[in-house]
Each structure stands twice: as C-alpha cells, then as structure tokens.
Image 1 (tube, helix red, strand yellow):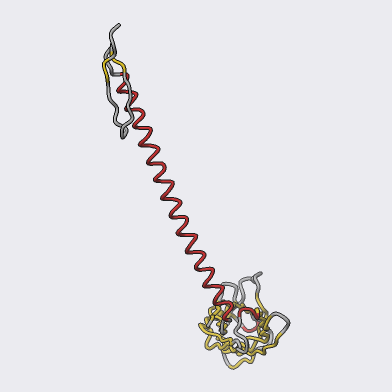
Image 2: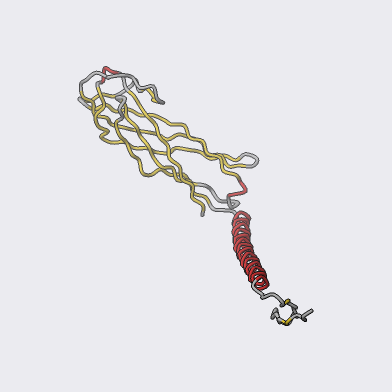
Length: 210
C-alpha cells in the first residue's frame, strides 16, 4: 500500500459591509471526485467542498491584502455569523505503472485547520491522503534500487579503508627511509655501509683502511 500526502491552503476575504472576521466557528472540507483512465495514468478529478461559519464583528478593514485571496461575496448572514460554501478544484494523476492492476485509488481529507489572517480574511488548510495498491513490478524495482544502494555504500566504505591503509603504508615507508638516511649521516669517518637484504635487516661492516 502506497500513501501520498500533501497540504492544500485557501485564503478568503469578505466585503467590508460584513465587518471583520474574528472567529471561524465551524469548517468542513469534503472531497468529491470521480476517476477515469487514460492511456498511461489514472486521473482523479473533482472538488474539495468547503462549508464554513465565520463570526464577524463591526469594524473597518485597515487595508486590503494583495495576496492570493478569494473574494467571497455571497454569505448567508444570521446575526453575527456568516455562512458560505466554496469549491476548490481537484486534479490528481497517478501513473498506471505504480498501481496494482485492478485496484482503485482512494482519496481522503484530514487535519482541517482554520485561522483569521492579518488582512481581515481567513485561511483554511487541510491534508490530502491518496492511497493505492503498489504494483508488484514497482515493488521489485524498489527492492533492486535498495540493494544497489547498499552495495554502493559498502564499496565506498571499502574504498575509503583502502585509501587510508595505503596512506599509512606510504607514511611508514617514508619514515623508514628518513631513519636510514640519518643513520648513515651519523657514521664515524672510516666506516661505510653495506646492505644485505634479509627481512629488511641492515648489516654494517667496517671499511678497509687505505
């Protein structure tokens, strides 16, 4: 089962004659949709149907916001409360390669939140959940990608360890050469150094006197 989530936000503003919105009393968002198939995808189209009660109080709007607000002109006013409905367009495309053959995606809404804004308006947001059965081909592909990623990680670690080991061997070799050179420089006059390789052990011999 694959679950995709995303957030939708809508902002609304009202005529000054209604006053200033101070509280969202109740709000509900209901998805209404139909599904259709095209050549390579399943399309979900419809609306998010919003119903909302807003409490207003008298006052003048300080200024008009310039954001992405939807102007609501038609409200059913009952005392200090105004009721309105609005439809937000919905359009979702899912590749057929991702969906198990014969299964049907489902779409739902949760975590509906609302608040008043600084521009004498309100904001309503919600989370959309889209669920569908994943195709076996897609599952196998994901497993292969995970295995390849693990192999690449192991190879990177091995490569790093090899570089560190080579650097350590190089450093030890350089230190050995420096030590050997210093030993030669410290020999007294009349001595020379003959080397006989035997497990890297060096033998000194007194030079013949002329």
